[in-house]
Image: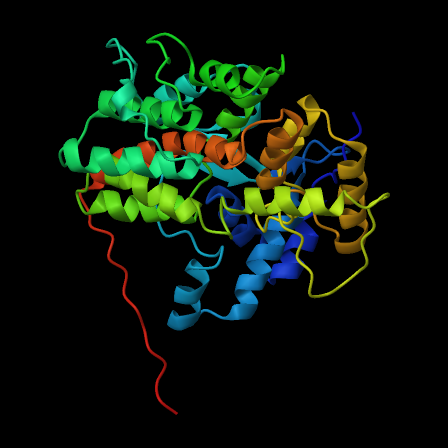
Length: 380
């Protein structure tokens, strides 16, 4: 299968120091702090090369200035790290769960495996079978997920341990599939695949996507979830915060937007785009992955892509020099597997709920309330 992607760019230490106007010692300090990723030099084993994307980001931050207001503003716009976490990280165009490549994990792991890994626990007790009374009657996936979380917020108390967290994961999955038939042993991806599709590859493709969605550093929904967790709210409330934030059209809601746009675009034969400086194709362009988001690329390796989608993706790369995001991969799965409407978003929400739960436990452990300060510009 032909996949358009660009190899990550790397630079010599001399060029990196020149661009950032720093000395080699400072460059090495940036590397040790995880701000710049490196690769071995292909022709000189004594040297290393440095990520151009990371250097670009640091250079942009330098140009913004280091005033208190500039630093505060940059933390809200893919800028300065503001929380310490051991759960996931993004380095050199790749991302990792507890230091292990998420792409590698997606090859064989289940979402249950990732739950145990990120929440640092073992699913030891026999999980409760989801009762049919807890399958919400609403027609849309999003409404059923929100409905069951609202019910849990009212009935499950104010805390919750890791076994409760696993039960909540199963509740979300059952409501997304609109079935109470999830047995105590059946993995989430098998239940969703069986309920949603007759495609023979559906369970495995859904499994891969769930793992790829499980966590992604401090994204908007994860940060919102950590704020909620820091107040002492219940796990259900933390998940409600995450789902609510994910639903926004600039976050997980991009999955539905991307699918609608791709379907409309592909009605043309052949699909044809014209360049426009104001156009921002939904499901393309991730600022943390200027060389290409690895998540949709992994999905594309295993899921058939219609020729019209390939053509459109190629045109976007040529016209805008931008690559597909996770939303594109999830939209493709929903389209190609003929999944129910909203299933792409549901895969995102169910997978990411594992990360939200893990971040909730990690935040609780700090015992700190997240309470940033605001600043006002001085009147002129």
